[in-house]
Length: 468
Image (cartoon, rainbow, N blue to C red):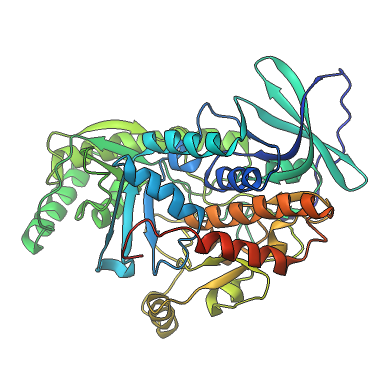
């Protein structure tokens, strides 16, 4: 589904206070936004990062997307290594090579430490930070975003900017500026299921994976509980929970005896409809409550566990996809296409979480094509995200980064992963600052110059772990 409507030029009628003038204003303090602000400031741009929450980290913290996943490590670039190295110093990351499920690099981060590490990195770079502020309008003049209207507890303010980077995940700024966008899977407003992540505390994972007998016992207990009407959520009654409960996949860093559970799946939700999103939050919480009970009662290692928390914001995998000068296509992602103007490498799987059922996957994992693609990934394959996919169509100085960049549905399901969001954020921040230094717009900036600068910057960063 597409939508070319936006707020366009905003007329401010109440003479709001001009909060400041900045070279670069980044909206959204998640992996993409923090990376964009960091790299713009390091290149000398006076940079402001606007975040509606009271902390940095974005989905890692608010949606509890604490997992680290990579099929081959080539998508772990630049700022990601800096961030994870700082997390490592805090004993706040767990990362290892694994052999199961075709995802050899797996790990997790401590979500509380994420806030402090981003604070530290951005403060060192001199980034100005504004919390508890939401962008509610864009001042557009002659195809240029001159500034943003911000709502704060103190009222309506304006910040003026020479470059704006939308890292909101939902493409809020670009949509308000009138940039065309699309959403959904081609037929529906929803593209993927939503997930309410929960954490269980006081978990002691078994030293060895459950054997066949233990798995059979767990399945029998599940069946009996369902027959007795003990649970009502389809997350449990459909059997989906068994695929996760037989292996406690996501322990947090060692000092925290906790696991993160991504079992939840809330279906057929338009993530841009506030009523549907509200109901999804309530359904996700109920799924979490019943899942916590099931784990505590039936899953080995969780006998003394408790529901530590649920994510502040239900996990949204896809909403707006902004139209840019270029688009990352499904064929790019499937065929591992390379481009001269590639500003980030993406190598995660095609990872669509269906929005219309609790168990099925749209990918035939037994097909020869799927097996071949997995083999290619294991051998180090990747595809490029093009520079033009970060440059918003119709607004000369507006860039986007993260999961809302210009991409087709299938491609977005792969590039939405957090390390790729950091890489596209790094590229957007670098390009914004470089365009200012060269006196040109991001639209007119030579992409090859950006590619070369990113290569130098990334090569200068030591890997966070020796096996990467």
